[in-house]
Amino acid sequence: MQIETRDFGRAEINEKDIITFVKPILGFEEYTRFVMLIDDEITGFAWLQSVEEKELCFIIANPAFIENYSPAVDDETKQALGGEITEMWLMAAIKEDVAKTTVNLKSPLLFNMNNFTAAQMVSEDTLPVRYAIFGGKGSEE
Image 1 (spheres, rainbow, N blue to C red):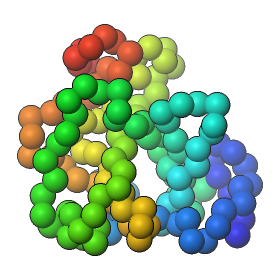
Image 2 (image 1 turned 135 degrees about the vertical axis):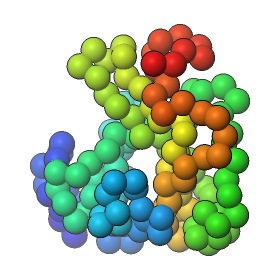
Image 3 (image 1 turned 90 degrees about the horizontal axis):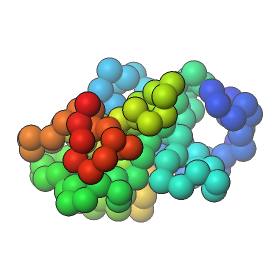
Image 4 (image 1 turned 45 degrees about the vertical axis):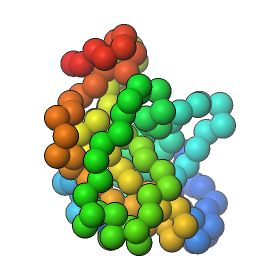
C-alpha cells in the first residue's frame, strides 16, 4: 500500500505494519493509525507518520540514551496493549538549533509490536515534559 507522507513524499508500506493507537496521542485523538518510518542513517530517531493525514508526523526518539529512564506503566495501559510492551519511544521537539532539541519524558509512547498496538501514557512519576537531550546529562529545559 502507498501513503503520502509529510517528509518522505510517497512511501510504500505493508498494511500489517500499521500501528493502531488504543490510547491515542494527546491532542490528536481522532488519528489512531500510524506507521513508523526509520532512516537507517539517523540512529535513535524515527518518524511516526499518520496513515490518515499526511501532514501529521511526529519525530520520536529512542530513550536508550537517558540513564535510568524507566517510568512506571499503569495496569490499564499495559492491558490495553495486550499485556505486553515491546518498545518505548519519546516525542521529540526538534528545534531550529538542533542542540536545543527536547524530548517528553512525562508522556512516553508505548508499543506492543507483536500485535501492532500503541498507547501514549502520562506517567505518574515526576518527569519533565521538555528534557534537553543534547544539553548535558540531566539537563532540563
